[in-house]
Length: 211
Image (tube, rainbow, N blue to C red; front, top):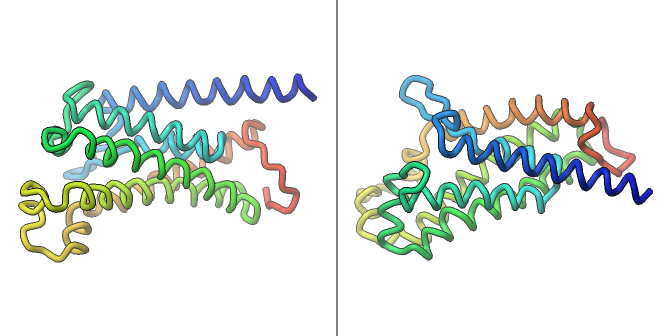
């Protein structure tokens, strides 16, 4: 029994390492963005979703932290540069950390819980798809919420809003990109989650789940 637990811990550590490395590669290279015409769709939420599926809420939170730290470093001009991130960092490094890192940790943590809860009642492919969709949705939701909370009163963000209704501004700002990210997250997580389950890399204890 103990050897089986040690083997599972080793597998989890290997998966965490691989997903962390993948996140870093996606974040510092163009591979993290799928360009479709004028759209730029980030794929960085997919490893976070897979982490939540395989490793649970804590694993999702850790990978969310990795994603957030790469974004925070880009706000400092390290590993690429984010125009908005650089401006926010100049205004307040602390608030930028909340915006870029803590929001991703929370999104990753909740992503893990979403899979844990849905996998009790749904087929593994459906629960994985829901988890991938939720990872992208929560990332967008918390990113925009903390942006407005932390920087909404700054001249920079007020200039971007330009007197619009806040909801209209958010919809315009995230645009159709967010919708495609959610779809991409759902499709990729469905495929990868199903494959990992068949490979016995995902263990669900509840006997009443469909899978």
